[in-house]
Image 1 (tube, helix red, strand yellow):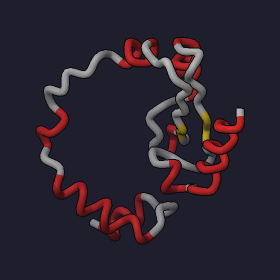
Image 2: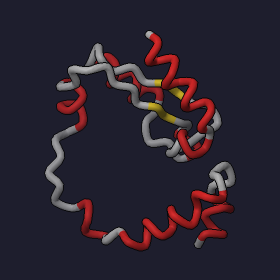
Image 3: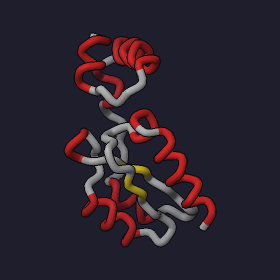
Length: 109
C-alpha cells in the first residue's frame, strides 16, 4: 500500500507515506457517519475571524474548486482562499514552501 501510495502521489515526501497508511488502517468506516454537520454554507456564513483555506488543483485531488472558493469568499468577508499550484488535496504535504508562502502572505495583510 505504501508503494501504491507513492505511485499515486509522487509529490508526497516518502517520510509521509508509512504514517499516512498506518492512519488509514486505524480509521473505522463508520467514524464519519452520523456527525450531524450543518451544511457548509451555514458554517461559512458564521465565520467571524480571518480564515485561510489553502487549496490545490481539483485535477490532482483537491476538493475545493475555484468556483466553490469564490462562492465561499462571497459568503464571508473574513474568508480568503489561496491556491497552491501543482498540488492536490494536501498542499502542505505536496509543496510545503509554497503553502507556507501563501500563509505568510495572508498573515501580513
